[in-house]
Image 1 (cartoon, each protein chain N blue to C red):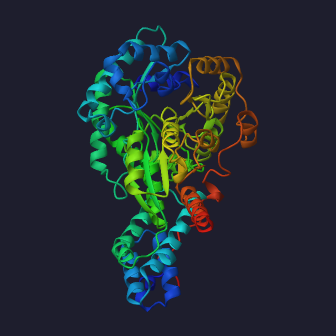
Image 2 (cartoon, each protein chain N blue to C red):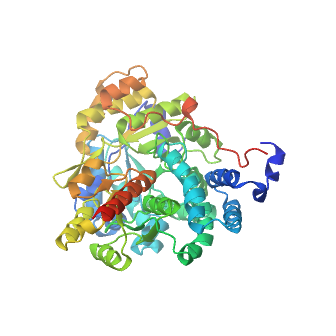
Image 3 (cartoon, rainbow over the protein chains, first blue to last red):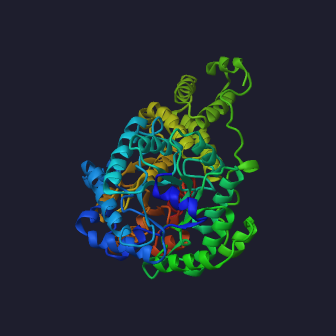
Length: 336
Length: 234
């Protein structure tokens, strides 16, 4: 229990994480297509503002501006050699912000997907994935991150590669996947499958869970799926503030701060320990979430009906687990 | 799964059984078996176009439906598409040689500012799986890339993809430019990407929004069919 997140989890029964990074950066003038990680160097003041915004709104933990800071993503901007350096900067700025507060604030070094499909279906080998994640992990560690934070992962193979890399870096970590396709991840992982998978890892995460995806309702259904597996490992819920809508030429997430406050309490009742937002979640949402978590009593675990009543409908009828699992693969040879 | 299942010899199956077996093999992503099946059908005197439409496209239609319904996911679809590709590699030169009718042609690309390509690649693969010819422009395409490709490739369909809420409005830029140049109605314009929805597709003047790769194929077939019918009555 030598790390800040384990200490905090031993003292608290819920932790408020942060909200959106991308949505906030675009509001600060980031152009679409630009790598946000370049701002760690070019505009450290704006990254400081981004982090401070979350903490001032009540977050106990924030993610660094390093989501796309791996060699594979940075390559698209010709900066594949700068993964370690840009990741380090994101954590340095984070450390400096966190240490200004007189309450504990955790710097979580964000690690996003490589964007590549792993072998044998795709081109990314396990070894190369481990190497890329390791490089980024070392940068975040050097910059002073308390924990590493893997997020928005679709492929279990990629999750495992990251776990291995984080062990090489000797860093505690948290890892979430994005369940956006008929209740599963794009690569077909179910909530129950993920809960089982994390227990098989050599270097297990301090907490695991779901982020992004499609709306707050779906995310809570996924959390209930984790809980149903009976794991004692703390669960993370970081859902989007509703669904993006195209209004007058701009993109707007339809989840209000009050709705996200409801979501935060439902997430806690569902069994999540670390609760935050993702795309579209701004400071005003976090403020309401903090207030709700502090002032409202815990309730019983919500049913699916209670979730949809409060937060709106699901994007798919089933979540891909249990009796709704797909029919077994057809066999290679019929007849015979 | 009994052991003697592997003893089935494709060449001993009659045509109907073999086609059924190829549907299963495509579903399971078995590339070598698909290549073998294609060769057997050709040896039996099947026209290349029939092998494509009855065996391969038929099989990929099942894959597409199960993908749309959340029964198959990306890894399985990639494997199936890879098996399909093996068959197409054999058929492609023969299709050209025999002057087979073409199903349709699509130019596809991710819009300017957007570097995501998994979804677009899936659509391209599924479209190829449905027998379409696909020209993939890759990622980060400014309007000029699309216009050049439309002119040089002469496709039936223009497909645009965006994964970011900040890049999706660029699709409208492309469509507006097509309108300015008076070529908008020469093409079927399909759009897709995680943050989009039908409302958005309509708002920017696309012909249709496609929720996923399977829907893209269905929509493309429907629109190309409609276009051909219009051509016939004109």
